[in-house]
Length: 213
Image (tube, rainbow, N blue to C red; front, side):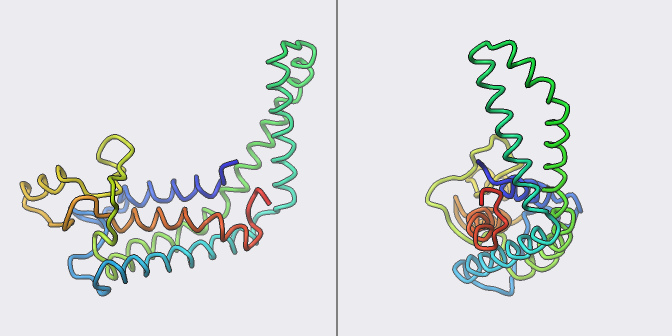
């Protein structure tokens, strides 16, 4: 089962990358004259932020979420969904009708599970915004690592993880930047996103906040 934390990280970073606060200006998040110089120190520094923020998220989650109740709801919901799917496959109408009677209750449980998972995000998003918008851009450059391949798997310009030759040429044409030194450099926000996802599962297991424990 995919960790709900992955979804939360994705939602966080969509929000951050979109610059809804209007603080980023013309270019991506970062500085033309960062305090931390060089890609390796920058990449390692952001990994440090990723680990610390994941630990903070796990701590908040441990305090706010009743893990025993959450796991019980998850198990009950999964069992019901599995039984319902089996009934549909076997075309057992009597079983389908029996399980359908619990639909309202199961929907209520699913909503409660969603609320329990979203509650920590309402708290952790505030320090994340402060760090992401006011601290990281002064510490690090626009790009902090290089990928051997393009990582822009989602079509369009909104969710670009790495620099493209087309975007670099467009920036030159518009007289802004440069924000990238070469193609496939990874943006600051994107490197944080990737490293946060990479460490979240391990940290949740170590802190016993994983839903799969």
